[in-house]
Length: 293
Image (cartoon, rainbow, N blue to C red; front, side, top):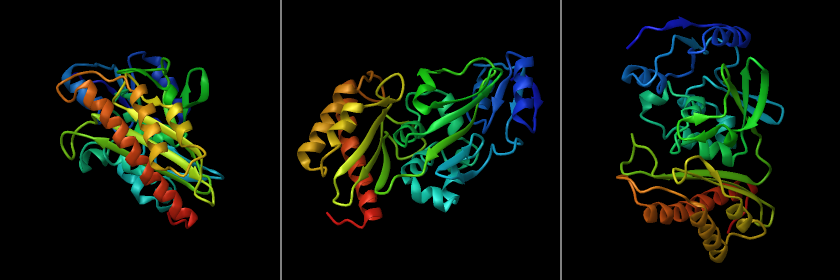
């Protein structure tokens, strides 16, 4: 493995300047993807820009009606924030399915997003939650929905010298609940054959007022299936409604055949997992509302 220059700036401006000075330089958050790719010879950056010393890049905090997660925050650290874990259990669960415990102690959701794997676990959950990314670069700072970042396997919409600074998730609406489920050949240390994130909001009577259903690993990028969410709105999630939602998910799925799963299996599992995730999310929303089915 080549030995690139190593820099650890303490400001976002400093990181931008270092990335601009060397077009081959890459930012480092957790490094669980970056270092592996360097060792395999897949990438050879001239410099590595460590972001962890920049104030605000690590940790979870609340700013008014928004939770902010620094881009260098390890996945395992999310469980340590009681308020965030209570607000977004599905996001926390998804982030803590990545790799092993040792990997999660270093890995970040920003790295999981910017690696741009269609099977990334944290991304469907973040999209279901309506999360946005704050991105910094030579052109300034911009904010985009998480789903706008991956554009193809291994490719993102980030421009030269840009990097994710933080994720911003709204404080859930009253009666909100979320969940993430995946199917894998093994129970852990594996990537999703199908992943499904669901976020919904129930009113005091238990009727669904809003829903977002998101798929991973069944297309080249994460998929927000608006038809599936619309199928749930206005209902109490009875069997016919859940069946309609599952059909919308299966219709939107566009998986590939490979050694880990066939197209037919992945489409079928997408519908099954979406139904299960919707019921878990509804159960969590009911618990917040004090509703019994």
